[in-house]
Amino acid sequence: QVQLVESGGGLVQAGGSLSLSCTTSGIIFSIYTMGWYRQAPGKQRELVAQITRVGTTNYAGSVQGRFTISRDDAKKTVGLQMTSLKPEDTAVYYCNADWLGVTHWGQGTQVTVSS
Image (cartoon, rainbow, N blue to C red):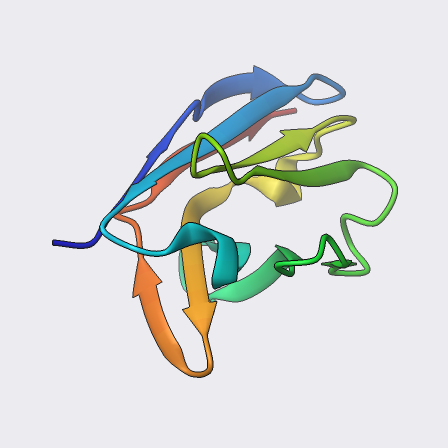
């Protein structure tokens, strides 16, 4: 059974930092591209950051320079370090695993940034 479980969300003031983590099971983690997506109320889910199996990263322009994605293949986890948070970063953040179109999602974790 595939499971992706996010943790680390919460409430933070603007300018603050937060770290998310996604623990996985049931997949061959090392072959997957791992990503973080987010969905704000009334908006479509959007890509925040991705990291490929070889460590290549890709970020949304709105978080470039503020967020850092990382992966630990031994622990089968992916992290997202978020700094200089803004109210517009408020959303539910979802962990994603993708391998050649085979995609798995976590349940999401709420991040709220107060102004």
